[in-house]
Length: 222
Ligand code: CTP
Ligand code: CA
Image (cartoon, rainbow, N blue to C red):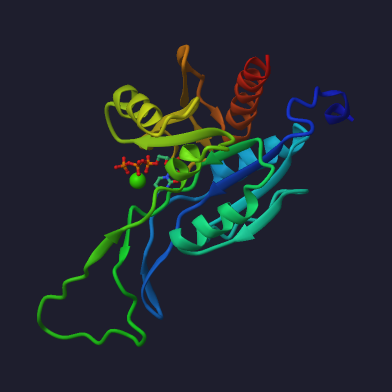
């Protein structure tokens, strides 16, 4: 009933997002991944949906249930994530990159299990595409929002990424404040500056992000 009376800040908008970690195969049973839980991305997908948006959530392996009404596309690797994003992008008004995309993948995945030996093993890694930067660089780019989880110098790194990827908005946090936890403390960065938010549950932080995003979208429309 309460939800019924809430203003639908993103009504009529299509939001495409990424969330969770990626998994880059080494061989059929092994791979490179990271400790992203996917909780922040899933909470944000739910908040966008509740705000009235059509939401496509391109998700790496998280084990989390899809939020109600959200169209989830499951992927494993960064290359699969990039393809799924490209497929979902037509008509999108907003793209939000929350995923902790692996920066590198093994140059080639072994067809069979790698056998142990007593000598050193060298893995050759090759850079993955930057999904968010690629979307933001499109001539028909939707409104792009980035995330940055840093272990130090948050302001410098977060604002640096926002400018380098040409994003109107970026959500920054210190890893010690957010990773894996149900709470998060974030700072929102946009052309007007930095907007620190109080520490809160990821669901509450997600609602704040939606409100800020909707405000910037409204300004852009005028
Ligand atoms: N991102 C992406 N594709 C990648 C790497 C990052 O879409 N291959 C997106 C993330 O989803 C996030 C933003 O870019 O929204 C910042 O990711 P982050 O890992 O913090 O920054 P990088 O540019 O990868 O730089 P670094 O890891 O060196 O800090
Ligand atoms: Ca990275």
